[in-house]
Length: 360
Image (cartoon, rainbow, N blue to C red; front, side, top):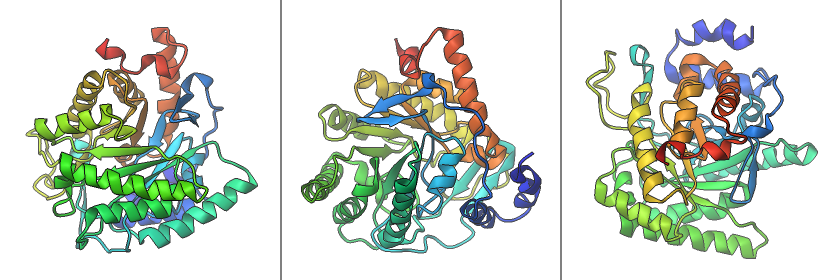
């Protein structure tokens, strides 16, 4: 039994945001669990010239300020995605702003990009890099970037974040799909996204001239996208304007199946109810791109079977967050061992062989 199993009932008795902050403090203090099984080579995958020891990551939103990169990777994740980071620190939306829908194994949040800004994230990333130099952790780090709520030039905000933080990232994610920042989802339009990608590309080019490295740039999209915007984004991806897509962010939809009294709360819904729509979108994009664009599958993963379904739908990588809220860190090992078992059952020698299998 791990410390988490002892304290989990107590964490469930306090508010979701306080529980989250307690968890971050515990991880930062070295009280987090460590994966006890050795990495299985069948789960290793290479994307964008980076070697992922396994395809399972921790989704953005958990470690907004890059505070616990090492402890998260020690749990067994192949990668972690920090953020969303904005140029300036901002408090986010008024509290309460996180709601557990226990009956539905779901969460509604309307956090609004609360974070310490680029300076706060960079300070923590510098400390992480120093620790890497002392003994590299095989896990990789994605950085999810956004714009400030009061920004007058959104593209400039994304470019600023990319220029400042790109050198610390194994990949960058442009978040234009959170439902909790006014007007943000409008940036998924072709014209707005082209401007953002241009600003990010220019910032990264300047960083590379200064001795930086080529950074893959992905776009995180909404499960609520209209067909026209989705078609435009797919065309841009196929045209080489981005290096991959993250599918998907939280949804504003409220399925009739929701039972929790919190279901009318405003904000993005994550967890079990998001699994089917996000996986269907994932498969549709894989088919439209003919499997040529790397996809990260996010939304409702709570078991090895869920993770495998995302991969078979077209995800080269997968990430989760809400599943940890309800099942704790044991879920990581359960998914990794379960994926190996399913690959063996289906006759696949490596995880890459199963990507998109349900679309063939």
